[in-house]
Picture 1 (cartoon, protein in one colour):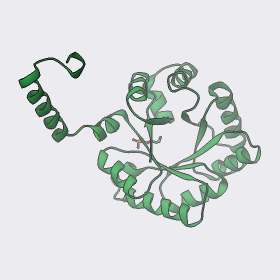
Picture 2 (cartoon, rainbow, N blue to C red):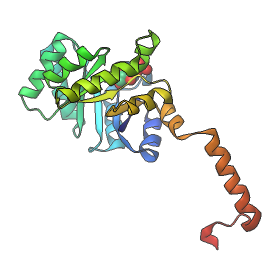
Picture 3 (tube, rainbow, N blue to C red):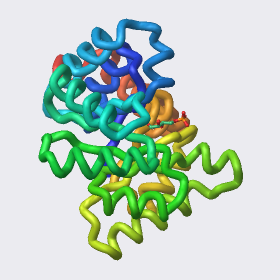
Length: 226
Ligand code: E4P
């Protein structure tokens, strides 16, 4: 299971990159628009924070395959490193995926806005490295996001596809946990969800107890002071 951060908020990226075992950052046009920043400055700063080894997924805003490929090349040239172009599933998106792979451009492809296992399978067949099903958006319409993720994981494995699932659109820890239990390869989550994975009221109570008991004998000294 790998964790990816789903934001373009530089402070959140700095924080989470320092404190969490992150494999990279995903963005989409909505996420980027929220920052109201210069596009290239923002993306280059994200690359600067996470470095060249970690994945950076950026979504195309083009609709035609030729333009998607052109945009992917420009993004790769400007941002370098471990780069993935995110392409919403469509005929043009599949065509662009096949072209990027045919040209061996060293650009990863994440087919995004996936809502069914059938979409995921055909995206994998076209050469996608990742497919991104939207768990919470499915849950919002009683679409059982976890079940969709599980079916995609099973299908990709059944047909030995060289494609991983990056489950996306999470609103809570339970969704992430259930995706992991379903054998999902990775999850892209917000900083809030990431922090909630770690925090637990019983953990806080336990730590408070350790601190109180220690202080009752050793005061404010730590092991380094003894
Ligand atoms: C992946 O990067 C998706 O674009 C993203 O997770 C969608 O999340 P949302 O449903 O919270 O907008």
